[in-house]
Image (tube, rainbow, N blue to C red):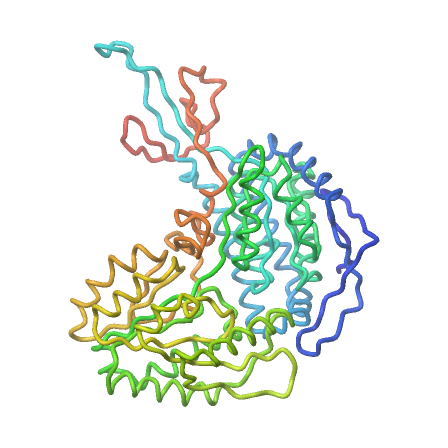
Amino acid sequence: MYNGAILIGAGETRAADTFTAVNPTTGAAGDVAFSNAGPAEVAKATALAAAAFEVFSTTSLGARATFIETVADNILALKDDLVATANAETALPLARLHGETGRTVGQLKMFAAEVRAGLWLDATIDPAMPDRAPLPRADLRRVNVALGPVAVFGASNFPLAFSVAGGDTAAAFAAGCPVVVKGHAAHPGTGELVARAIQQAVASCGLPEGVFSYLPGTSNELGGALVSDPVIKAVGFTGSRGGGLALMKIAAQRAEPIPVYAEMSSINPVVLLPGALAARAEAMGPAFVGSLTMGAGQFCTNPGLVIAIDGPDLDTFVASAAKALTAAQPAVMLTPGIHASFERGVEELASHAAVTTVARGCVGDGVNQAVGALFTTDATKFTADEALAHEVFGSSSILVRCKDIAEIKTVIAKLEGQLTATIQSGDGDEAAAGELLPLLQSKVGRILFNGWPTGVEVSHAMVHGGPFPATSDGRSTSVGTLAMARFLRPVCYQDTPDALLPPALQAANPWGIARRTNGVLELGK
């Protein structure tokens, strides 16, 4: 069980300054006092991480993969306690939390398999050419190595999959980087349970204790101290734009600037093309509302913007969506603060002179409940006020009515970077979709056809990222095996004695991995 401790390496400590979890369904504070970590705890954790780095970053592929699998098994072993705790702290449904536990375990095991395969090392060999004229070529060998200790910030909306042992931590471990986690104050009991599972895995696998530390806390000072610590070489963050920008500023002002991989803000435009509306306008209404209101809309891929050409078919879609939303039951949001922010955002849209309210969801009798909202405006008004394109985190969306495809393109061109874009298409829409694709490709990290953006598959091909401000670095992803690349850097060895080379580059290829020699891929054992 959890007891509110700070976990630094193999040990635990407490602080005089404490906080409690809040049950968002009732608004009641929990019984356990959780310690607020501070700069002193950051210094201890990062010192241990620095000491662990050389050993952990050079572990064999098998040993590192076994460690990650052990973390997954330890989490699975406490699933029932974990789900019950997360439910009390976040109000997320039990079924959702069981699914998220499975996703967390699954992505850890996926990274373990990726580590064993060794493709991420990108081992590349250009053998010496001493007789080449006019100049000989040295023996050149390149491989990816771990970047260094990584700071990970737990997310509010995914207490498991994007938190203590979530995708950022899994990717950093897979790359060979020790991790110091700043636990999210919205679900501290959940965070500590997972942290203890990792702590136990570090010990049972015989790894240096500094491979992992867990620092719960509520203060911005804690996050700032972690990012500014010279030991930390990269940051993984999922949260608000304000929070991400603040961390990016701290990281940029360090004596040694470091990358902050921040996932921050996205409204995920959905384009309804004429053929799709003609064929299934009524059916798309409830499907859209289901995506919009899922989990109280607290997904980074929530469809916060719909774009379509005005006309009778669009009217059918709007009527169908309004009917579905009016019947949609409210859902408890993750924290009172998130709920208050959602209410402010919805009120600002509802009172905006350029916006019309289409429908609201059912009003409940509990606290912190999100009442879904759908608004509409036209393309001219939307593009004239950038505030209309700001994210309202929760089940709120705005429909933009356009005159034609050209006006749809104008709306898209005005958008900031996004995580996803969706095209609903049907017969006769191929040419229009072809016009939109290059523009959308420049704006997003993932393009969907005839689906809804809520939900992210954890896989090798997935990209969960996008141009700023969806993320701080549109070249990266926080989901899928490519997420490892954020915590790696290439090193080239020139004329280095074979015995001194990393195993991935040695002549005998002791790890049996695939390598590229003289530009030709050679499969491993």
